[in-house]
Length: 290
Ligand SMILES: [Mn+2]
Image 1: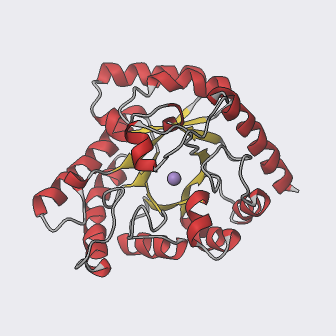
Image 2: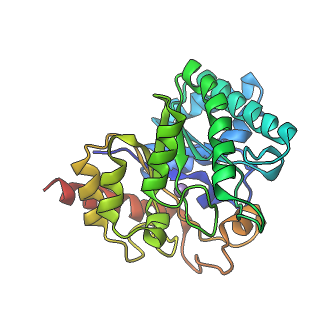
């Protein structure tokens, strides 16, 4: 069965939080994978990286690396200096991941996030720029054995790719064995005609997978068709991780960027909810095996 993970942002309101703070909690809740902030790791000293790597290994956790690029390094910018900064950043991420023994890079690694298509901008022109930038950046991913997974997100967060079809078309144009597609059920629910259809369309292009309920509560606390989703992952023989991204806490830059405008936790306990969600996902996975 696919290893189950969680995005560290579940536990914090700040993207800059130290990933080390979440290793023990992820293990305690029963996860196999912890998705951490890639930019944070690129800024760490090797001593800090060693500490994190050791903690994760001892906890039996695989780390995956999430990115939400900022506007000052947007690969679709008209400004060449900004695009260059983005490419250099992504190459640094691949190098830092190699040091960590990391394999999966996830998120918005082809433009900035959140980012609307502004008036006067042409999606085709900006997509061409994104592809040119990724083609350059992905060389470091190839050299460092990193899977460069481009995340398909909903229209309110990005415009380059909102469907699996657009994600696969993008990856095809990048044309690297290290370029894969990342689908996320929260976004699929908003954009796609069918959960199964979108997952089947991604097929062998699928390199990583995010689990999100319609309400961004932990899986099991919403109304997504988990049997259809896990059944489709099985149909395409997806072997990667399934990483949940629940967000319950308003405030901070996490609350701002995820658009959490009310307290979704209430009297609940974050660790208890995460633990229950892992159990829920395991049961659903087993059921889908038939
Ligand atoms: Mn996601």
